Length: 136
Length: 136
DNA sequence: TTCTTGACAAGAATTATTATTATGTGATAA
DNA sequence: TTATCACATAATAATAATTCTTGTCAAGAA
Ligand SMILES: [Mn+2]
Ligand SMILES: [Mn+2]
Ligand SMILES: [Zn+2]
Ligand SMILES: [Zn+2]
Image (tube, rainbow over all chains, first blue to last red; front, side):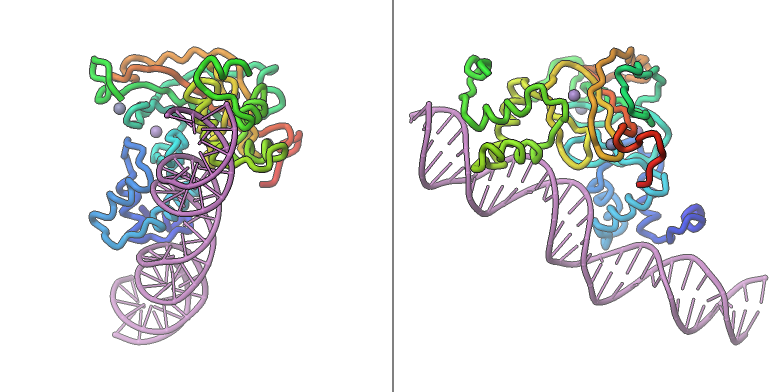
């Protein structure tokens, strides 16, 4: 919490609420999800403030922005390198903590300088596909 | 070109132009890119028609939709499983044709049924990072 | 008829604008 | 030392604007 000050970010109740909702949250919520959640305890919260705060937190490295979901951005408080498994039906996202060897052969990589990678696994979550096949 | 008829899609000049632009195109263009390109030879082309056609082509499996770029969808005429390397500076996208072993340990995967995967590599392309370090 | 186009409207997510408000920082008082 | 006040400035909230994408529908083509 103190870390905000040491970094040039003012400590506001809104930011605390957003950070509190995100910390340890494994759901990879969208801006709208976050807005709804913090609005409960914070009815005057503005959606723009959510976006602003998320951007500030991202710039400072406290969260990462995921492009997994074509419809909207998802936010992740777990910033260390990991991968994701997304349910193609309900868009639930699960963290995948596992190491993979991902060295691209030189003649494939060309002259790009590789700086990172991210694997998206696709699948069907337990809720959407509990043993049986699933319609839509 | 012939394949349209065998599948229930009428072969219109607009669709031919879009398909022609996409076939063999390694640039992973956006809808806007495609619109601009085909508009040159086809000034009356509507952006809605581009989206409609792209959707039809995707449904029939002739192209795939990529979520690589946070800003907009990119379209890829190469539909067989492959991965992508995106320049974090200019958003250029390069195909990566290489196989990777991506078996998720059971206790990590949980009860998801895995159906596919896609690796996004990040890097700096030759144009953006030609040997020297690069400002912004 | 049936499908497709193109013009335009409509949605949804995100960003920009801006007047108002709150926060951090010193200075000062207790 | 601790509390209080003043102020510059950053943050908020309301709302407008932008961007990407989808929907509607009359008119045209097959
Ligand atoms: Mn995660
Ligand atoms: Mn590709
Ligand atoms: Zn699911
Ligand atoms: Zn580049």
